[in-house]
Image 1 (cartoon, rainbow, N blue to C red):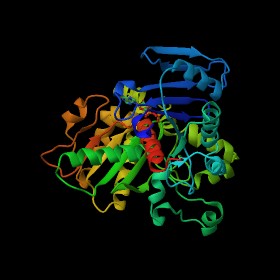
Image 2: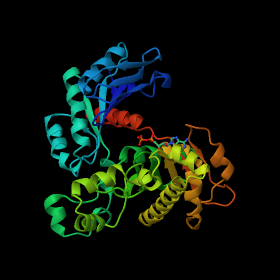
Image 3: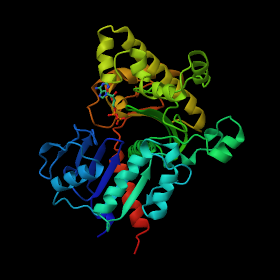
Image 4: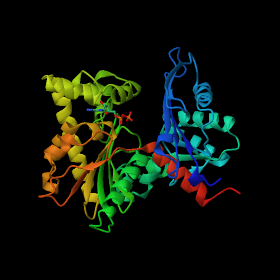
Length: 406
Ligand code: ADP
């Protein structure tokens, strides 16, 4: 069977969660898509939420269930749904993986070697791969890396200004993340623009992926030229619970003056900072926009800092592009929070971005659309729902079509 004409099972394993989706090929109806989530794995509260082949929602308790047990339970519920390949999200591919890779022993070993760079994520991704290899030893499986899209960064964008042997001996450099999403939405913006027949490209896009994790990216002619995340997903923007950029002297200061351990500081920066730390209320932007409307001072401050830092990052990344054709908002916040788009764009009018306030408010949820003031701006402002699962399925099919094993 051609891989382009059949469905792909996409697996995204976190440390205690497993997201899955069966992505139909382009020749199949979109309604054939099925997705769900297993969460709290390894705890008594482990459960699966999904939809059956008939489209009926179900919740299944699997107390103490691990990734493999959850996957087996999911597959029982999906009986009769055919797929011919499996695509896995893998967070860190280091410098080794510049593209998606068909999974074999060498690829597994290389992913394992990258684990020191992503100690929480890569082991979970490997667990998912091991489970599906056991369950489907004969199906082709592909790893799609969050970092691969950013392997086109020029060296001046990916080097840190630290002693050279930090890089040459320990591979301390900027890698970037959310590459699957940045690639998907920038490709879509390009094809939607080409459909309008106004320009033939190449196109330069600034992308803001704003979910629980947030990052910006400068994309020129389909290639990432710079991005806000670095060695780890802690660098860059203010996020739900992550601080983003801080003075690198702060951890040493806290250690010296308060005796805090680096492990404690790492937890504070990753889990207790960002929107949560600033607001003292929540890491969730919907909660914060509602609280800000009621006058909650912490929520107001968190939103101001979030938007200012986002605008500053986009302006900085504009230096990477020979020309700017537009800005793309995506991720849960980028797609659904008009207030955040408006506050951010108010700081970017000097770059030629002018928002149509009405279009910003009335854009239908879940659909791609343009929200710039057409009469006064040369630059497009897109809102494009991301679809990392569809991108992983597309890259899986493309790889298998290009290099069938037999
Ligand atoms: P993840 O990175 O986990 O995939 P999402 O892309 O789903 O996360 O984004 C989650 C974020 O999107 C949360 O902060 C959530 O509050 C925010 N969000 C979703 N809908 C809205 C909304 N209508 N208004 C404001 N924020 C929203």
